[in-house]
Image (cartoon, rainbow, N blue to C red; front, side, top):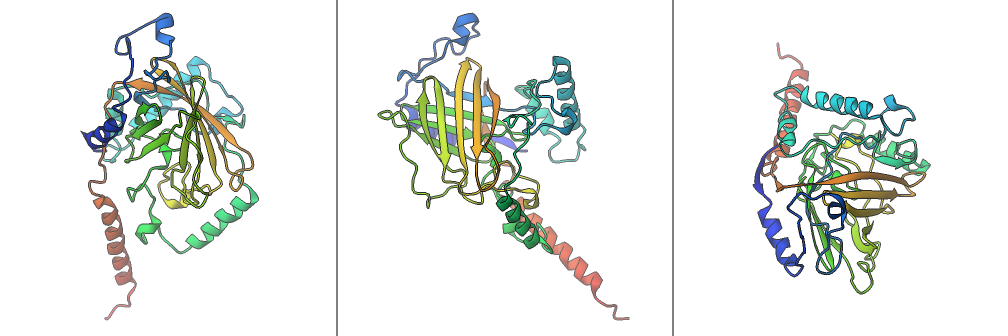
Length: 347
């Protein structure tokens, strides 16, 4: 994908907002060890300093692959073998595939994280998403029935939100690692945390209320957002982010290649995230998702977010989103060819 211009415009605007938040970094740019390395860096306001460039790139899948059965933790040798398998699959893409070069430039700054867990999901212990509720099964069946006789290229509305340059489901919440561009930047003040994602153009503004320790109340349930409404608070050295006010169009893990593979949550989805900086180079990211209209039980996951030098870049793969128009135009040309071949011969 095209990686050209750093997100200078967004960063400069957000930087103006954050100018009042001077930060004490100490030896932040130097390599440290022992207690100095594990000490929690803090802002002048005393908050744990989460700022910097980070990645949640990993070879660990959201759900446990069937090949691992009930195994939750791999041995070091098993983890290395699985990481190699995933990398080999990535490099085996045809060289004329638009995503082939992702495997090259992604390795320029860091390698994909390879922890020994077989899934990002830690609850249920199966490492897999809970079953859908009867209501969700009926909802998905109705959507499948409505799609019969249609094609993903019938109209703009039948393409994914990502293809339409609106949003990419992986940026969250919860923040499930995308296949590429798995980079983000965190900035903060006394009363705001900002997360800028390299994937797409999503910027999460998470208000904090210093007087109460949280970001105050969510708006009315009638006010809905694709990424929900996030409010933060500090619990000791952990930033806890509570997100509600989703819509029925929210894609909790995506985007899929087509809308036909999507399972959307509903407006009752509730996500709680926990950000804990455990050392200079690592934030422990934990999340719990519940939606009584979609899954039979809540589910939780965990991943290490790792520091890197940055910067993050403008997401310009669509170059004005000409790709979407070309997808639909090509489909109409194909429709015309099929219609012509179906006409009776005049001879």
